[in-house]
Amino acid sequence: MSEVSVPTPEVTDTLRPADGPIPGFGFNPPTAPVPGFEITDLAALHARMADGTLERIHRVDFHTITLITDGSGEHAVDFVSHPCRPGTLLWIRPGQVQRFGRPGAMNGRHLMFTPSFPAHLPGTDRLIHEWYGPVCRQLGTGHDYATLATLLAQLRAEFTRPHGSVSPEILQLQLATLLLHIDRLPQSGATGDQHAGTEIYTRFRAELERSYATTRRAEDYARRLGYTVKTLTRACLAATGQPVKQVIDARVALEAQRLLAHTDTPVALIARRLGFSEATNFGKFFARHTGTAPGDFRRAHQNPR
Image: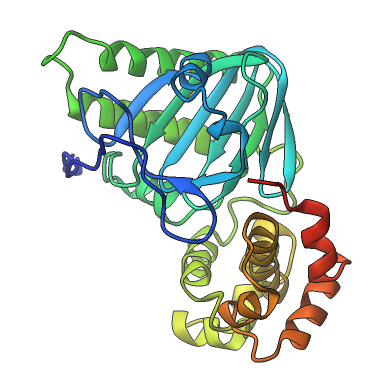
């Protein structure tokens, strides 16, 4: 069995801005029996952050998993508003831009953990560091919902044990079990065989996250990873239904949308930050992928902060 390691403390006493131009926060529960992990309810989280922070655009540097149990509403992630109702499962990953819905409209279990917290097993490491699964799943209230609700209840029971008796190792293994159960849920509406080419695709996505601002050439990714462009295309088609070049360009376009909508960074600087030598080239690229010019997109989406 793989070794279970206790993470280095990462909890801060107060909210701190995350790195980057988009407002964000690090992992900051006011009290926690173990570092790097917290499980609470949406209602309690809204009460704790009653200044409206959650309802404004922000990004976090940790994972959050939410299972809606009561009410209905919406949760916006990267320009998509996901309808939520009992049985909705949300998994927001570090760096994604989000906005919570109206406080009190819905409730559910809300799990937060740093990337270093889960047990280091091959399956969990892939999910935490390499896999780019769906943000939202609609489970309904059948078997899958009951299974995840039970696993979350077990996590909550261990987390709320009397002071000094909470086991980080048990929490890590319980969390690993939850993540692996989520991974094998059916991906409703997904295109292609979601298990074909997974290792190649996840290696490619990890490299894409490192390099999307420096190269958009599929040949560069193939060379760095030791594959052919055809192999990367097959893996991307199997996982997403899109060829590798479209996956690369979509990642660049998403970051451009985030920066245009959620920061005041000049368009020319955004272009340079994303690897474009000329703002005009960036404008053509953005219009081709979003159907609108950068300035028009900013005016339509930028919210007062």
